[in-house]
Length: 428
Image (cartoon, rainbow, N blue to C red; front, side, top):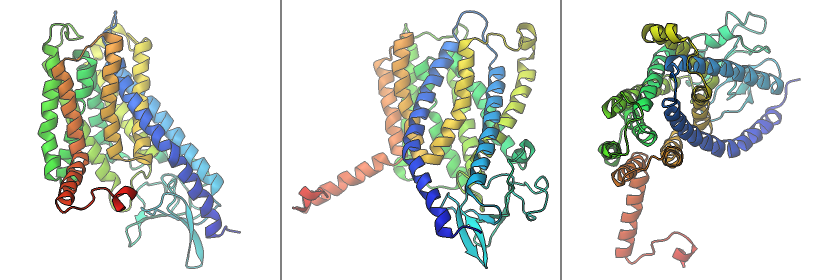
């Protein structure tokens, strides 16, 4: 007998709330640690003695690891869903809820807001073939929420996970080129400058959000754009000091900053493109998260192999595919594979604003690690530039605007002779 709505929904709601209470902070710490470790390890891996590893090969291996882990996550999520949900019924996604809720509709019962209904959906009925009915673009109701048919009890196959993955080819290409450009930037920049210049992706994301997502920015947010540019220029002036030579003997500051700037442009476009695709009518943020990660990783492998054959073919033939793959290279592969999951967890259990501040805070951690490990002492101008970058991040995310509004409100209250606090002391 099917469970009553109240009986099925209570455990799901409680479990989800408990997960979010500790997974949110843990995901933030994971992202901060991953960003700082990635910058330090990239620097260390490109200045070791002996032949360098092929960046394109490292990208392909990292994408392959992410693909396998994402498919495993999809299968695990499906197994969890199958254990906690009775057979039959229809699943309906509710943008306001993420847990499964059986909803009585016309004498039948269906689950509303099930986040696991991402792949392996059988629309034709309980007895039809799953293989022919696993398109991930499901039908919509009149109210715009996506409705899918009864799910199969078996885990989805790889082919089912990869179905309807063509739109992910564009961001995958951008992310692959971004990873290659970041390796070039790390070869020619110190760890602090590399990490600080990466903050440009905040601005490129804002610009593409205006162009693609049609969002509106206030005056303070627009002012944050030149503020960040000034901060990046000031931080790069550290390279002019005698003791801050480029890590790569044949490199230059211009090459490193150009590579990082191009990578930030690609990152901003790919991120906004993916966001727009996921926020189309009939989908919700976070829906099919691991399946999309698998699709991105698959195309990342394809484009990574294409890049290796086009640009690193001679070097790979001469030195071998695994040339230079020591502990540092494998640590870079692990960090690149971890990055996709860290970002996905932050988006799922926190939000993009917190993710931005976490990424910015990792710059401070990177500076401390670079000083301890490599002796990179930031100049006064570079420290001031980092301060401008953090200020611009606060301006862009609205922190400065809220602070100014509160300050002006306190000034107006003082002029009127009213208390400026809202606590118990202010009410006395």
